[in-house]
Length: 582
Image 1: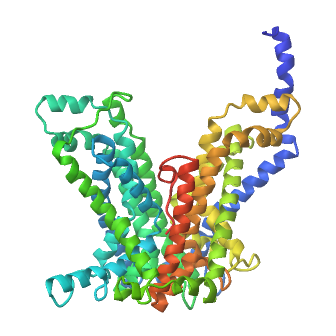
Image 2: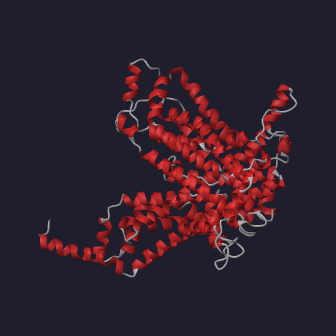
Image 3: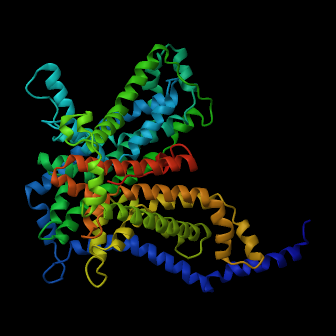
């Protein structure tokens, strides 16, 4: 029953009064405190990074000498050039891998699409450094499986493959970056109707001609956007770079920053050297946003139009063969060789019953001085980071959506800022901000947890922001009219409604934190190693059997939680929300 106007005003007055007085209530201090925590986690490390790049370590005054030191040597400048070319090559190869798979899955009647989607997800979930070690075992110049097969089958002196090369590194990074191209391109292709394809078909175009002349050009903005993401990931990736480029003596930006963090520590020079990379990243990120914002390719085709699958006929099986060939290189072969090495007394002897052993796992779990603690640390730090990230993301998203502080929209920008900051740069910023006295968190578990939280906060925030936006605020107003405060509304209404979305965000942050390399390598201490750090410690020892056993443990952990996410949240949950950790 509708109340008279005056009575409606009387009934709404308490809600309006509560909204008007929100800024003066004690709970407003909570919102301000959360905003301060966000700024301390995201903005402070970046401000400290810029500040310390101009700092004279001797006098603590201002200087540009750090920039002169960072770019005065030819090898330092060459590292920048090498990284830029690496990014171009990786992006081109990843598009060559990913775009045809996206087209086959989304626009054709290719068989076994479900299997292809699962294998793309498995590729995305595989830590890049595990892919790198697998391909070292497969394509190492002397003892690699594939090279040995060439020697035995063809009777030649040596195999043709050498993973320790620039283009070997390009291949490795592209092999685990192409899922970005699949995700972006599939999303675009699934929004394009078949009307223009039908018109081209009527004019006599073949199925492949209309794909290259009509369908893919309409998806070009999404393809270019995925290329930018892949490029930025490639130039800042440290894990595969250390494993492949370091032995190959190819200097790249991540290796140069790693060198500055050696002895003696050159933090100021590292900060100066990293800022141009940050500028490149931010610039290309905004280019990507502009490209994604151009929705003309959807409007032209009529969003919501009918989308019919292309009949491939006899070409269905070659197209499926191409998809499975790429996925064999990224999943089947690496997983097989990793498992064989983990269960071998000597991996180079190949698979046989006499070479089978579980001693590598026993050594890691019960004899190695750091392995068991590293596994525990990984679970604890990743769980804590996921919990903190989701809690902070939910709080900030609530503040932004309900406009609880005057600068609410700025908080949204701050929360998403880490997405444009490469992991190695964020790690250097964290070290500059929180490692030295008076905070003195260097090497502690807390600095790692906070770094993981900050690094992957955008993943949780994007999820929480979208979820809260789908909830009508009138449900909270009803709670408050009945006498409950905002915290009661959050606890009793919002969180139960958002439980599924928050669970998905928690799982994803946990997964990518457990495989994070950049932050861990720059910030760990003697007692705070994670599995990713131990992985590189074992690499230096050259025991590929123990290395592979640790890789299998990490891979099983990651795939277990990916499976949980699929069952609880839905298919491809990681691809829709994901990010990398390398």
